[in-house]
Length: 460
Image (cartoon, rainbow, N blue to C red):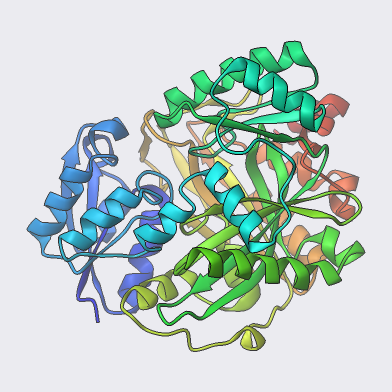
């Protein structure tokens, strides 16, 4: 049993991990930057250690400082949350070499799924369909043109590292390919310190559907169903739900098939702990592997609500060597869950980040409403990090009830002093196509070009 763990993250995920640890009677240590001195996770943890200045490159991305804090606090394990060092195999190795358990997959599994290009090759080995594309990195502009002509336009240029939609550019002809190739490489280098890109066939207007997996150290791997993450803006998720309305309404048999594919990839990689296998699905129900997120996901709460399984607690228990006490047949799904990411952004100004002091903060409540957030009245949002300040999750007996609760909860959510995406999400919730579950990854672009801004202004 762990006696103390260090949370190598910040914001709502740090709060989430601290809560899970407390329920397991495990003490927690928070690390924080100077900019996060008054953050909620610092106040909630049993101990807190400052590891540097505001920019993440001087704090949350400094392996040496995090390990020093872990050794000073004499912790048994480190939970990396998501983002920052959560998918860094070197960090996992350093933890293990210092006799500190890493709460996540092994460095061996991370290396097998090191980047998106490596993951494509592993999926191919596992017999899981992948979109046609390049074999590994595309190092030269001419190679990019050759690959695009071979697989046919449209194509997508993708950074092998990172996520969040950065380093991704679609191309429909040679001109846009050359421009997109160089832009994607520059963006990837700036965001991830890795300019590597690959090219794959662009599946237009697909559904983005992912499967939650769990694996213990005894070789047992299960999936906990799918999440539909197709409501995206610039390849960044905005609203997620489970089960997927697309699968529920049109291809119920796809759930079993995709679940088996997700497990097959995890088995091939020797995966342990929590992870997510992401797919795209075309309108004919044909699915293709995208990547594996080797960590807990932002949207994990909707899986928890639909299955009754605490994923973060299981992460900790698996890291302690506990076997999964359930098989695939033990996993049951009930009702419908939905999540809106609440970002400190101005939807009237091209979603420009809106850091600053929160003057008033009132979170919605009631049956079937959950808030995962680190925000509070008087809290100052730093300018250095991701703009997400909370997640609003609702659960209902069916999709309509979950949507109605979400619409009600969004109308109750009051945050002043900064701009937020709440009115934007209210506009989505009121859209007839979204209400019917008829949407693809192009939904938000279509909404904004079809009067969406007017709906946002109306809601505001």
